[in-house]
Image (cartoon, rainbow, N blue to C red; front, side):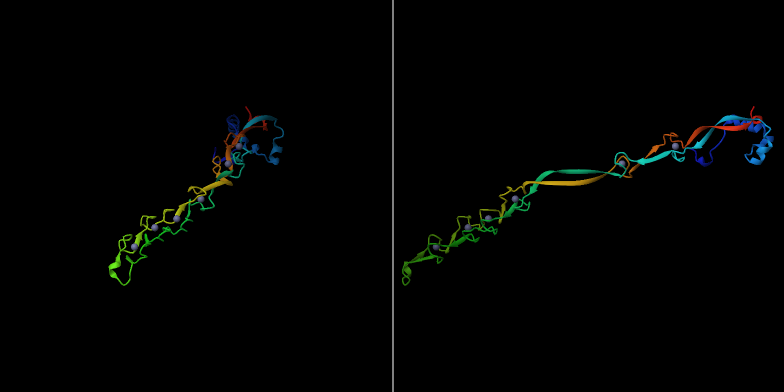
Length: 230
Ligand SMILES: [Zn+2]
Ligand SMILES: [Zn+2]
Ligand SMILES: [Zn+2]
Ligand SMILES: [Zn+2]
Ligand SMILES: [Zn+2]
Ligand SMILES: [Zn+2]
């Protein structure tokens, strides 16, 4: 494309040389009415000239802006997604675990209340079996607790910890620990930038009228004095 397209109107070579040879007629070439009167006696002929003009379709730019056909000119595409997906378990709020209901979440052995032992059931915690309070010979050590007064809790293996759960936290019985239970519907829209127009919404095409040149050659019938032509 030519940079100085604004003043592009030139006459092609054959016409130009004709003018050059008749330099004495320069004054008469003027389009002014007054001077045209002076040459009425000369014979006028119609000639066809080829003239390069600014393309009116693209105003000389060679480019036509038009709405992007991919996105309808808005610059983005909208995707709509819907379907069903696993729902978060409402029992455990999606965590997969709940507070143990057997031990109320405290994780302690219910039999020994977490102590790992309890008062000896034979000597009631005294460590001694007393048959006659006044006769110390009748006192003997409790074999059940070896004189300690305490029995180890056999339910929890003397750990004091409950067997029902891990430190008060149990697997959710509703979702079996997955955190998901049931299905729910979802839908959302997503905007994606149109790659075809880079989000601008319009595309630049070469002007079909001038093939992107910005100028077109037109034929024009002009009147010339016969003396100008050879
Ligand atoms: Zn054009
Ligand atoms: Zn687009
Ligand atoms: Zn659950
Ligand atoms: Zn428990
Ligand atoms: Zn216990
Ligand atoms: Zn005992």
